Amino acid sequence: MALRTVLEDALKDDRLDAETRRSVRALMLLGAGRVRLLGWTSRTCVADVASEDGVMYRVTLDAHDGWLCDCEDHVIRGAQCKHIRAAMWLWGSLDGGLDWDV
Image (cartoon, rainbow, N blue to C red; front, side, top):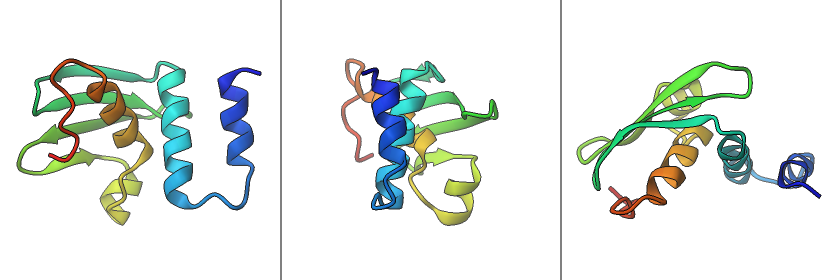
């Protein structure tokens, strides 16, 4: 069974909380190649993340503001959205990008 199918099936589970759903969706974005890092250092990151419907969101990390995204989930709810999680995980997989608590 393909990972995408497993993740899609997981989203059908009504017992998943919002945080877990965001993480599953972030994994789906990564698997679909929808995350593009535009620039990064060991303490900063800028990425474009395309949602499932093709809308592009800008995700940034800096030492002062932490992780930010221009999507509604983050701007209005203050949530660590799926776009931030996807960019954070990709950035964290790079050399020097392991300090996720900035």
